[in-house]
Image (tube, rainbow, N blue to C red):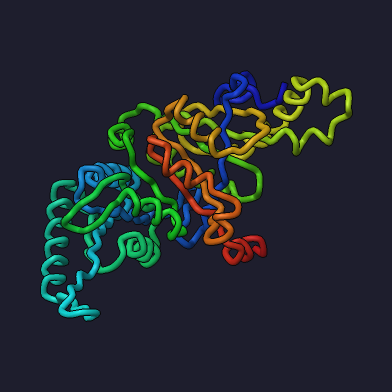
Length: 354
């Protein structure tokens, strides 16, 4: 048995999953000094950006953002977007309706101000902007050096012309900030800060060098309140079996036990300095096939309050060729999900040099 057991470590119990119960996900990296989180505390001058389209779902997201901002002492920035609306004045001629656009923008500002008043959080600012919603939310997040972006999923509004469910997907792909996509667990996320009741969090973690960001976000969550955290990892058996003798490969159970003993130790080492309270468990299982469907099935089976996953930041042809676990999560998982992108090579280089 690994040295990191429930008996020898106060972090919490280890549990071996039932066969067929597995989860894996790409890792995240949260760069410090660029919308990044300092894991060990320090100055909490933070900003949370929340995209709003005035649908019920986006209002739920705003309430969660407000609760988390208050718990962290962070600034809350509510953002709503309006596209230009040209009309056809003749064949092939488009004429922008400047006055109507100005009226729509003013309407968004008024709506945001009323929402801020309803939320009742003094450190709230509002911003109404022109442009494609996902792109503008990502731009505002970068300009404000946001630590977190919050959006709802499947909300829509004729007023703003926004389908925020689609916006959530695009924001995740466009921003380099962690993004919380609020879904049906919104009430739990809203009431959790200050309740004393631990949030059930599943964190999909791997060992490709980019899990730093996932762990950094767990530090943030533990600063908000207690969390029972499951560090979930799947290893592909074909990648590991060649290191064993032919006789050992015939004993699959023996192989799994040997592999998992090392993996448990590595997983727990990642959270050795995690602050706050709550249990920490590991969830390990081998897989012989693709991981995306395993993620979906595991989350549907366990129904945590929050899933923390990551994105390798693939775009264009790389996304088409390799696929994306993140896209599967956003399209099929109903649990609220945090997605954080992997650091780019440009960001990682200075950190490695230092």
